[in-house]
Amino acid sequence: MNKLVETAARLIWDYHHMHHQLQPSDCIFALGSHDLRVAEWAAECWLNKLAPLLLLSGGLGNFTQGMWTEKEADKFARIALAMGVPESAILIENKSTNTGENIRFSKELLAAKGLDPQRFIVVQKPYMERRSYATFKKNWPEKDLLVSSPPISFDAYPNEEIPLERVINIMVGDLQRIKEYPAKGFQIEQPIPAEVWEAYELLVSNGYDQHLIK
Image (cartoon, rainbow, N blue to C red; front, side):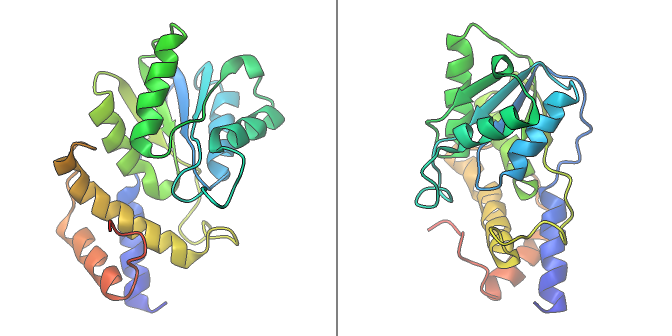
């Protein structure tokens, strides 16, 4: 990876972060993914008494279909239970396949349980904070929302399961979605600074286009 590519990737990584300061809330809402550190961070937030309820959402989505047989929310629940979160504090939504469905199906589950949290802490991967925020606010605008992710640096984030090349491809695709999805009714608008979009174009021109909208 040359220096220009690295600089562009770091810029987009930083843009995807919302930098919210966590406060006590009503529900910790973990959006399922292929990164089990999301489950660990959501459970840690619960153990730190940031909310009484831990809602885990995710079936088999874009990255886990064909990779896992166990649904994302069920796998997340096993991790939370092993870390000491009691079963009574956990709700599981395991049918959704994308971020919009995570929110809509979880909204229906909470309503069916007679629960109406007002403030959520949404937990996602570091490079999906902003898109999760924009999608949540489109689907549930009346709720208060803080977004968080495992506190891992750009340098420390890649691992065997999620190598750096894949991280960059996903970040680039998510930035494209932040730009394109509001017109489709999937998200609210998010400002994209010119230098961030220039970084996107540089990365696409260098072949980081595997997660772009087809």
